[in-house]
Image (cartoon, rainbow, N blue to C red; front, side, top):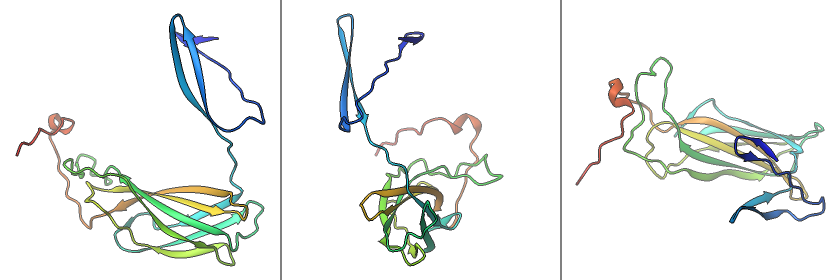
Length: 193
């Protein structure tokens, strides 16, 4: 049915017993066929509460972390298997009061990287303490974003997931340039060897 200027809405459903996976939707308009893949998944809500205590920001130095998990009923998640993965990706380097300065090195690119920073079993209180020592496999253009993905596994194998993002400062000092406005958004010139 039409829902606006040139847009049509199609309400589709699968049976409650239908398998999850990829389905293909095909539409015919005049003599043209259009198709797209629709993903149908079974989403289960978290049954465990997960919290990761970290410093507000962290750097290359080792940082202390504490993972705590409880069942939503309040009971401890004692003895459950858990892991914490860290994904690093490029972020914008900004400091309060210095918005007129550019701190990122535009000549460097940073490909996202990930690493398992901890895995094990939770203690009697449903917690685990560990150290995080980030290792970079490339030079960063500036401040990075560290996304922590925490999973706690139920005895059945199902798991609950929680995410937390904090800034990661790979350098001890930063130098900023105050570029004239006309150069600030222009692309870098091509360099030839």
